[in-house]
Image 1 (cartoon, rainbow, N blue to C red):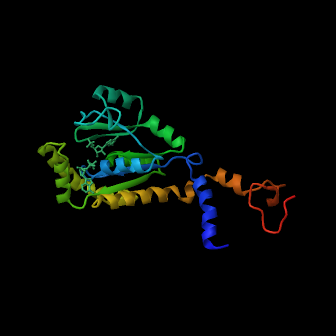
Image 2 (image 1 turned 30 degrees about the vertical axis):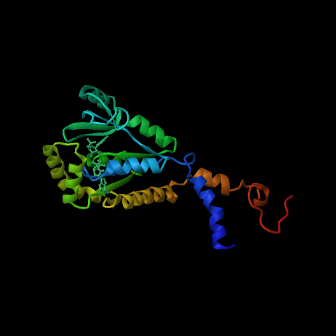
Image 3 (image 1 turned 90 degrees about the horizontal axis):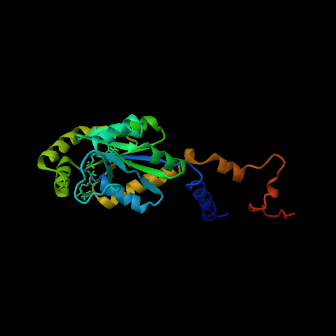
Amino acid sequence: MSSSSTTSSTTPAVAHACSSTDRRGILFIVSAPSGTGKTTLCKQLAANLPELWHSISYTTRKPRPGERHGREYYFIEEDTFRDMIGRNEFVEWAQVYGHLYGTPVKSLTEKIDQGIDVLLEIDVQGAMQVKKRYEDSVPIFILPPSMTVLRSRLQTRASDSQEEIQRRLHKAGEEVWSYREYAYTVLNQDLGQSLGDLESIFRSERLKTKRLNITWIEKNFIFDDDQKPGDRKDLPQPKGVPLP
Ligand code: ADP
Ligand code: 5GP
């Protein structure tokens, strides 16, 4: 058998073993200093990879022009947020730039149990909490090309005051050093290249042997004690062995 025919006969099996009905979803965590481009990248990723669900956080910050409740965030009052903390409704929560942000636990758990991969776009404090709680999660850090480029991206985005931009830049100087806590680091210089890098990470993680569902392997490759390989008419028969 040629190597190409080996590949073509194993690919569907692997794809099936990794499909959403056969394994638990993977939790991807993306963090980056503000202005790096993580929202741009995560939106594009979720559009390119339909089997990836982009979690929607709750926040006490007010919506920016163009943002919609239930799309970018659930925008809520601080009292409501604190009630949710009291009811343990967040996987993690943190105060970022003077506002509260939190990841809802219910939708995240449901998706993972259904075998759907989840994308969290959260700050470093939140990422460290999730990493502890979900040891199998995949933390990815995105770096801007430089502080100069970061400043120019924050200014081009034009969503924050000069004072707020200054505050975010100052925080970025500390946040970049957190890259060491993440399994992967992606440099967001060229958008297309960064998207390609992220897609490679997602696809590779999905193919990791440790994520294969053992039940699927057993169902397809292990026979009952009194069953011989020839009994399985659904499997390719060895050459020269006639079917009974
Ligand atoms: P973040 O979510 O990390 O705060 P955004 O996604 O809002 O950042 O991006 C900040 C600004 O930088 C936006 O105006 C966006 O269009 C721009 N941007 C993002 N990635 C790139 C890139 N690779 N090259 C040039 N501009 C980019
Ligand atoms: P922004 O207000 O610019 O949308 O987001 C500010 C920061 O809050 C970003 O670093 C963003 O990733 C982070 N953030 C958004 N949602 C959450 C969340 O649910 N939890 C935490 N810890 N951080 C979040």
